[in-house]
Image 1: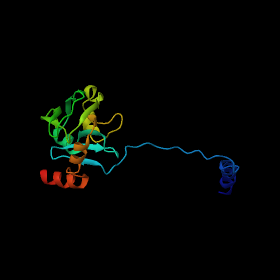
Image 2: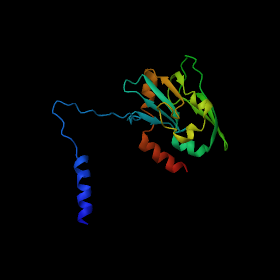
Image 3: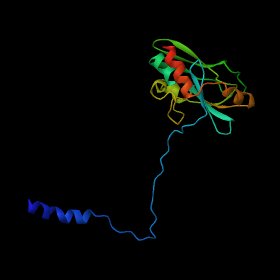
Image 4: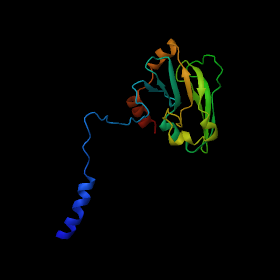
Length: 170
């Protein structure tokens, strides 16, 4: 037993951290994640909008609950980038699954700035990460919101209220 301890001792000494001079700069790596924001709101039709802090831009998608209820998504009709304002509740796209089809409605008054082209190629992304607004996520459109749209956001449900709403919806 003593021979094993003696043979491991030099390894332990070699693996000991080296002293670094005080002038050495410690490198650290930052990680990016999808931001959690208090400004994500949900509609009763199971859409969400993640509004930026300045309340002028946002991201729109369908909720995780809606994606689960739809089942395997096979087609997503993306909104058109027309540059015109769309009123709250108007249809901006559609989602088709093996079970059913459902419209995607504007959660607030908005203008479509860009759409998630990934959903045309891989509509099942909506099932995997429906509420992810990062590159590669299941978001549907990036939008511009005017003052009227920003005011409409206040009437939508926060995450806790939406969870309560969907638990009674089953």
